[in-house]
Image (tube, rainbow, N blue to C red; front, top):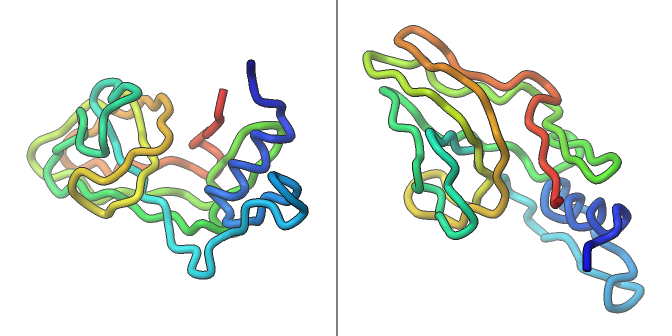
Length: 144
């Protein structure tokens, strides 16, 4: 069984935009958080898999830190089963030690082994002096 595009959009809106997913279970549906917070984008040097946490294969380039993106319509746009970032996601300038990024994750923590909820592929080569970033719309998040 697979989810419909309508259901996928509702769940992505709930997770990324903090928008209530109406008519799931009852007319009230799945209600968004009173304090929406952020999701934290992590960079990974290999696929963290289905069971890994936010630290699994996480990049460790010099000065690396996860980046927060607001759970709001200012942070994300959902259309046709895909969520896209509404602003550039900019990571800290790489110091001496670089990294080759193949995946990104969305999770719950600014650091440590937080829950990694969604992941996708990315292609970034991070060398000394480079500021890694994803342009507007470059992070594609889907549930398929």
